[in-house]
Length: 308
Image (cartoon, rainbow, N blue to C red; front, side):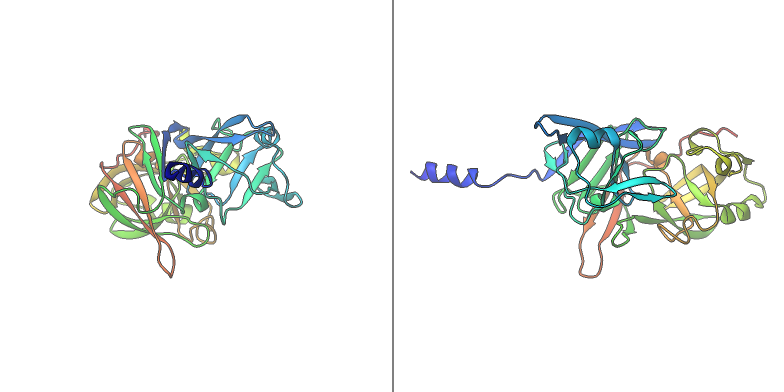
């Protein structure tokens, strides 16, 4: 009798996974994972998503929208970044874990199957989703882990990391040439981006740091005039806590790109620095605002994508 009652009780509740670890694909310096959706017929539909800590919305490409029968929630919106349609809530899974999409804006991109030409991905996972979890980017092991807060143990060197509210953008501080600057930790970018005003002040260093006009390699993310006229600079040394990273390359962005929007900082730190590193962003809640820290168990090293 007792076994029967227990069986009925368990049948009435769905067990939600507390953690999920999946393969991490690195393409164009960007981290990508596979999510699972369901078609209208109930069949699984896998899709590759870029993990973008500098992104604000959960976005699906047009083919994925059609395959799972995603339903519009409002009229189509047009902006300088493209055409998007707000979508009704849906279920998405990372491994065995259903993603917590509460407080997350969901959009479809009806005009394109893939959001970023340089990546073979059909969607984007934004910071608003990641702020619900402890997050581990294991680049050397090519693994990505999401855990419910408090279920994983921090390891390595810690950096205090305020999280913007409600966007969930993570911010870290780095020292360059004796001064401390705030960086948006932007896993969606393939190269470190810094305000041109700031880069131009560093060009005047003595001895001079190597520089060039025109974004090349992974620094050329979008093409067009902005990239062809961009300033590239190799920074002599960037300090992250106890780590001193030499020869960090950066590309310029127009004045105001970061100062007047997004992180309110002058810089965006690319994951190119972390490709030889396992890093985690651990969540902890307070009544005032969420705060997190980054924990690295190896010394970050810059990836040489510009040889000058």
